[in-house]
Image (tube, rainbow, N blue to C red; front, side, top):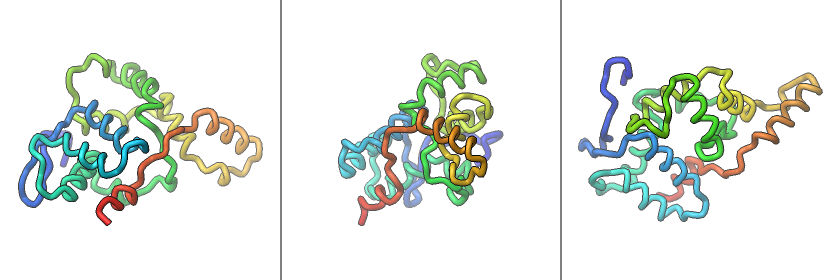
Length: 184
């Protein structure tokens, strides 16, 4: 899928049938928050995920995986899943970093995320990934994923660890294994 000349999808394909889904970025940020909420049991999360469908598919496992593919924009970034940053640490959190993300969109694109009536999730992701490295959110992401043990200079390692403590995320992220455990 090429965002430069193809329309962004409004559905997912499950067993040869298209299912319309919610596509606004706000709904997908809520989706992320739902998957990361440890207070909601996994079987309830899976039921709530079906609310992103206009018509709920019969194969719930395939439906959840299709939502995961849409969430990651797998069709737009097919190789992203195979390339890791080398770090399993979460780089950002939509809740904890909301102010930085909002400010970056206003500063860099002139987009007020509060006032825009609609933005497709994949458009939001493209803009988010394309934010300049000097924005606060990108700086936070960089520092959160640095492995201080790889820094040779003792003072620099100490400085990076101090920054990491100040900007550390407090939420536990749900892993792919957690999602997969639902079907085990």
